[in-house]
Image 1 (tube, helix red, strand yellow):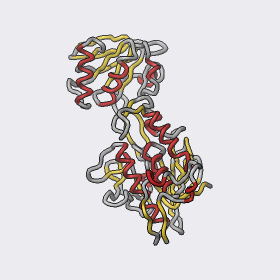
Image 2 (image 1 turned 180 degrees about the horizontal axis):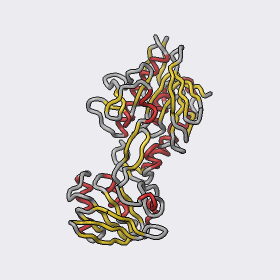
Image 3 (image 1 turned 135 degrees about the vertical axis):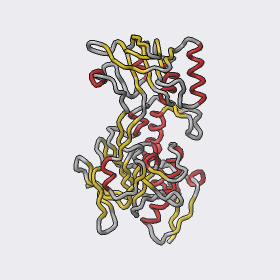
Length: 350
């Protein structure tokens, strides 16, 4: 049995940053995640994809951001239960929570923070005959390592930001990139649309609009695609087909935890501390919803910060605290070099 102050369900960027904020307040955390490594979608789906809206970083690869967050929280020694999903939740008579995973691992915590991103998710697959036959044989739903496609012929299908971003990126990696979208208009960022159009005009990528892949062809692996465009069928040689139609999110077992859920997201009180309808249970990051919600990593960081302040008060009733900036007092002396190591960043006063 694992005991801790805060059980964090989800080890994505928001969950990892919550460990840092909790650590400043002298609270211990243990994270549960169904993936085999920390980082959530950033690590599993697109570790090499650049992110542009992290303050202080004009651009940072998703995998690098995860590595930096792990380095940042290492000093607080969080625990991890990886490769297991939170299955059941029970509130005990003393007000603590018992979370048990699908593998039977029991966790006891004084508060629960759900930071599960989109929850459990799976890619939206196009309706193409025998599509399963070519999965991992030239058909990829995610791009984990762009070097896999160096010097190869790649066909990307989709009209959103992910399809546009990877088309731009792989135009400098693959020998040939073809972008297919079933409509003439894209729904991604205008800047990305303009970049893709420029690449087409310069002859650096192919574009088929409107177009739809209707058949996958190949003996032992993918070799060709049949594409219908304006009622005409054509064959396109390819080494890889990457349909990027988004993800289908699912909350999984959390739907049975007595939480208020709206459109596959957990409703929280954003006016105060991102607490759910259940006292002591919080939801932060992409998995929550409230008026004006934006699904951005930096918003998740903000939510994690306010949540930890609330949990501190829950765990230390009657105590007041004086917030001190880390630029003044450091990170609680965890670097082992400061004589004031006993001074807390947030000082409790009886």
